[in-house]
Length: 245
Ligand code: ADP
Ligand code: MG
Image (cartoon, rainbow, N blue to C red; front, side, top):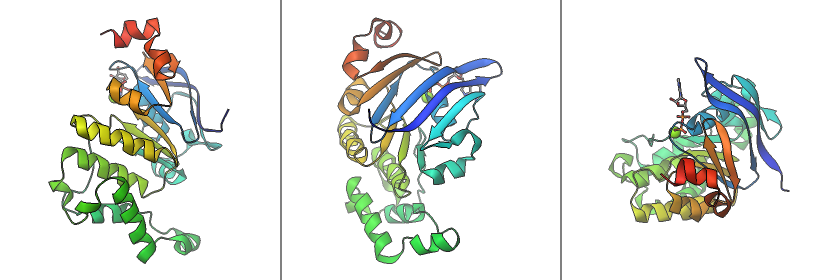
């Protein structure tokens, strides 16, 4: 079995006594593209919120590369190598694509940080390379506000990539995209997952089939099924509570 980059163990998250996540164990391997599906209210977003430090666990452990995330603040978790994308794109509309990528590059911290700080040509190359992966290399001088909805989503993924995360968490990245944009996003995510681990929440089953190494089905804060897309699609409980509807 390959190395686990993330281990979520015995996790519970309660909101006023309501258990959004109920004693969950969830593991992500290195360079795995892991998709989380499940009906509305299953706890998918809460799981990502808890990993990235936006929501505190009520109980349980979250280990990322051997470090306990549940004791860390959101910005410390980002620095440790976890990038999170929320459902709505958050790009700076008045800045160009280039500028959006540039300001997302990590800033120097202390003396050691200054030594490794990307600047000049190194930074330019990182921006160009990221823009190419996102198919935004022809739009570097455009204001982000003038991009299509799909391109804005890609730009935000690019802004996360500039921070060189080892684990990327994406909440419904193809929502509102055209069929063509979904296809492009599928190849983009497969490309991205060659160098890091990616957890994606998604509803579009065609899209999930195209990208997932492994699928976890959440229901009422618990794991209903887990495995390859083929496995979970044939699971009677999954068909009953999710796919059948
Ligand atoms: P999903 O993303 O799978 O649709 P969520 O994680 O958003 O589900 O929500 C799981 C459950 O937790 C839902 O019943 C939701 O109403 C509840 N919930 C989520 N966040 C909060 C919150 N901040 N306060 C109270 N209840 C919440
Ligand atoms: Mg959600």
